[in-house]
Length: 503
Image (cartoon, rainbow, N blue to C red):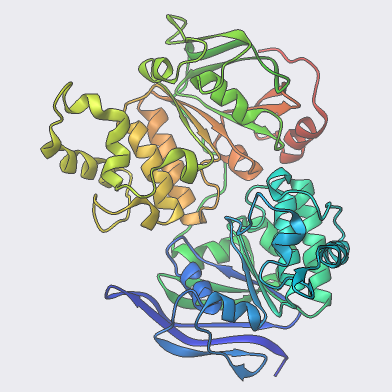
């Protein structure tokens, strides 16, 4: 038998009588990248939390390096060489990098903390990763990719044996992703077993060796990635076929302009941005991180105060105020943030609270008709296929895909005209993605228009009627999404910009 760094055998777990894991197996070789694949709710997070000591298993056993492993806390797991880097980083933003890396395992000189040695050791670990980060820099001043490297450095400083990466590329650029993959390759050479969780199917084949698929809390299959393809993995995940081809949109009304932006400027982030969005159209917005995509949407909705520019809607009949979210919403323009947890949802409130809050006017002007709220909420939960125990369930208890549906539901209930959806499927599995895509298509079928911002080129190519590419705060090109258009074409404009285009 090959050298196994980790074995999880016949793991089972229930929550409140609900079976979330049933007889699940996972084995990771030393020096391999093992992909853990499954829809949101398939049991991936629960399995990892059992490994990390956050949850206690009910059945089964775990072997680390061939020896039985029993951990009672995350601290215990870290001490045994198991480190998990979650999508939401576990870093203190207000202290330097070196303090984060050696938190809980500080070097001392007598009764004092030896900061000089900590900084030197920190620099050694960062150098091993091949990244240039000042060990004395505050974490809050780092980019997302740099924070990710600090998390990995924390793990290496603790002599990690198993490293778990949860959606590591969800918020970083292609260039930063390439650097991360180089680091992962180096860790493989050191014999570290890596569990890799991601919903970006293309990168799994680039970085992964083997793949374990979970579905509905059960083990489905173990495959070598070199001997399978996206279609097979998708079918194993969701037990149905998923199409990745561009869909034709018959609902566009080119004689009606749902939104027109003319000469939009904001600080040094947006420079003379102009475009038109037709009724029933899905206009994809592509570009690298920092190209101004989100800033543009926030200026349109009034969250940011634009410096210059004119924004009209309803075929030119209404002009949006310069800095008023309320005015935008009243005119049917809504924005769904890429950060659903901080900006899109009240996580500690119920699904009903989240859906009803922007639509309180529908329940009376002075006294709310609260008896209507359950039926109203359940109507939209059913319409968007939100999977939950009921309308009273807290938003934080939902899977990522269902959280995203709640964000969409509150604005569907608002019956908006223009939906600006920022990274609609970030951190969401392929099955839930398909449901989100279906919802978007239903919106345009009903006469709405969609401005879809996404870093996922495959998603942009699949869903968009036209693609607006941004570079350094400017529109590099607006491209018709024809059969001749390739991802390479879009990426060239995103990387290098383009000449002025005509509409």
